[in-house]
Length: 219
Image 1 (cartoon, rainbow, N blue to C red):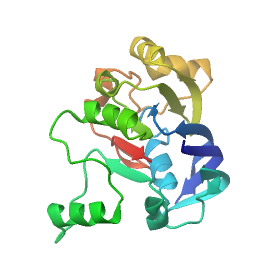
Image 2 (cartoon, helix red, strand yellow):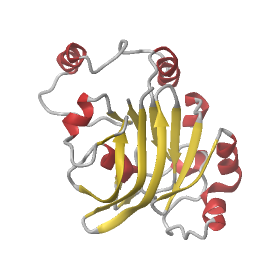
Image 3 (cartoon, one colour):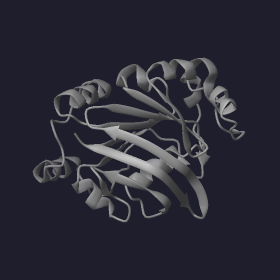
Image 4 (cartoon, rainbow, N blue to C red):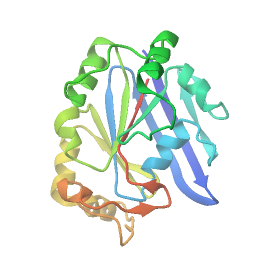
């Protein structure tokens, strides 16, 4: 059993505090999903977990099987099995896919093959067959139709304010993020879409975290 544990995590970028005390535990063989509107801290959290140098951890800790990752380089985290997959991968000029995958397989950093079937089903199969742990970060509720998460966490104002099972997704469909924000006394920014359902992802907005993305952390 592998466990990624985040405790009291605070972080900033360019002097702006984004994460204000994240507490989260994710285990291998389980799919956890973080949902939140634009500007809530989703992209920052993913980048901080992977050790992006532009983000400063100002408090708390991130541990993998009890060993702290804070201060370690991104490649060291990757060598321990932590992997960040973006919804829209960035093309790197001069790097061809086939040789890169061959090197990754040779290094032992990948399991299974490269699937051509539905991604959600593949992730589900890997959690069962390979004991993969997944932390999916998204603002699209429709991802949950395919991914079948074990736990859902709502990120607002740089904090995880609510966690639950699949029933939490249904609550978000009905009330949007405004309902939960009101419950916890959090003011959403004017440009943040309140609905967590299919209406939430119609536009592409920019914020201090960067463009809206879906991503997943695997270990």
